[in-house]
Length: 508
Image (cartoon, rainbow, N blue to C red; front, side, top):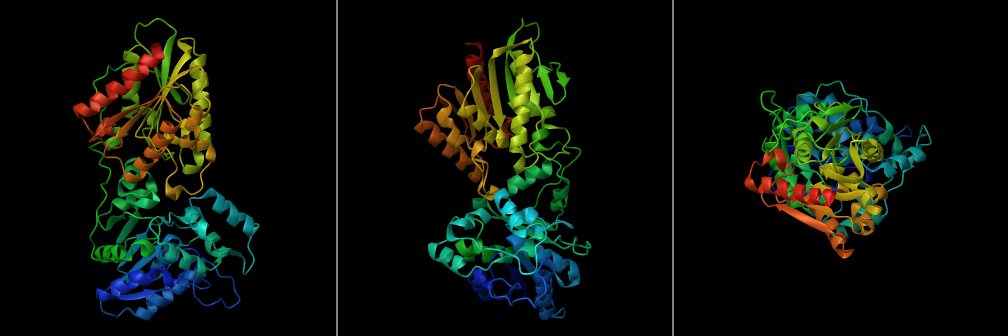
């Protein structure tokens, strides 16, 4: 018999697990929902500081109460903040734990506080302001109002009654639980684990695989065969929005089922490093700082230029850097072969908080491109990819007269739910009303992840509402990053069509 030890997230307690626990129990499992000190029915502290170590001790006590000699296996499940005391407890009782389940949570690391896993910068700032430097005993973060839970994760599909109850039973969160660094010895590093990702909150297995492919060091252990993944098509609170589906998933996770990630194979390039789908000439480039120029052969100067803007976030240590990725170099050479200057750059979008820096890098690159005597400063186009979609907002809101076209391939055109509050400067759906007559080209992948496709539809709705001049190029069976994944006639036709439109506007 499997024993599930369930640990909930910030402000909450065992009550959130009621529906899922009942379904697990009916399947023959034993269930222990942990009451963390000071949260959701957990007892008050004894006067000492309630911190992360306090909550780790709470989980350790439940593990010990199950007993190492009990039949079956102990599976620890941590949701949201709850994964931090779960991982800490597993580190201290590794011999008693069979598996850890990360339920729509981050990956806690030694020496890093739980606050670092909070996506919303406003929430992080609020915590630090409330702490005032070093929190005193009893310092707490007030529980959210009913309409503020979304800042901690998407409430999609949560029934109104469940959201009311969540709000009514919420407890203030002791600040030290979020600020105290997690301390791990590594004893639990080899334990099997499962990740349950809630796609309605903006997470997916494909996204994790893409980050693994980029070489993110902290994610490489996720390719271990003992690690499996599941997706649930709901928001951040599956125990409230789909308790039965969650219970079924936890039972499968405990049995070692699930999808496994593919490790990076040095003998075979990752999808984003496979060859460009078109045969383009190997034109030389000029490299200056973070920018490469691909110049048209034997073409009189000055010539129009198109700047290709890579997506992200991309880990700062990723090699090769984006301006050497086949998609970017392929497009740049294609452009140069058709008489315009192709430009690629590396910008500093390494985290969700870096859009401002990336926007500055792009603006500086455009300035330098326009200043080059071989470039027609009055005929510039910008072409964005994937996670650089939010960067289009600056150029949509107030297009300069020299910007002749703006294109975007499989872009993320609005913040995903798990991004938290996001700088309103980078909301293309709001900015497109200022685009005026600027020609827009949007290349849409038919097999796009639902959470990204929803942002594209939001943008297209806004563009239609304001009468923007937009051409949509569909790749019906194309994936995100289709230029190196889908070597089909439909994919090639999409590239030709999008580039043809852009070139017409550049040279008109």
